[in-house]
Amino acid sequence: MHNNHRFSDSERAAIYRVIAERRDMRHFLPDPVNPVVLKRLLAAAHQAPSVGLMQPWRFIRITDPQLRTTIAAQVEEERHRTAAALAERSDEFMRLKVAGILECGELLVVALSDRREQHIFGRRTLPEMDLASVACAIQNFWLAARAEGLGMGWVSLFDPMQLAELLDMPAGSKPVAILCLGHVEAFYPAPMLKLQGWAEERPLQELLFHNRWSNSAVPPE
Image (cartoon, rainbow, N blue to C red; front, side, top):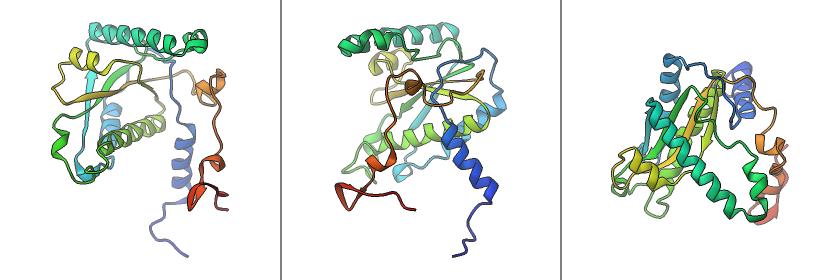
């Protein structure tokens, strides 16, 4: 069947390529990010879908060096707490590089907005759809960054209340991601945690079911 809405072969190839080559980066060069490019990335994030068109994302650009240092210290504190919680894998975890906060060209904190309880459409039975919407915005930002040749790392090792207080966020809001953005020497050939032996990716076939949970399905030909 002919599809008039389909993008060209080269355009579709670029979409699938950027998805496949996106990486959670931890190593950055100190070069600054072009502000025109940053504006494009934020615009791409803002075009994300959101339940009930609530647009619950808020972006805080961190330009104060002292603030960046404090955020890095908070992440380091949580890194040690996470290591303690991992028990037998504690030493292995501490050898991983989990953030590039002090090295990246741009640092942003992404948060859920306050007063989200006012938005009922699409959230009455699934209130977490606000977080899903923010995740879509972050993914847009991430894929656009990769297309621009910039690396991005999503850092989640922090205490939300502690970070919210540091950034003077209103009651009801919640930080959900620290984004490290910047130039990189090279993109990892595979997810870093796989390269470091921390975890293995599971094939799609193990995660695809047919009609009922755990009814194994073969991906479409």
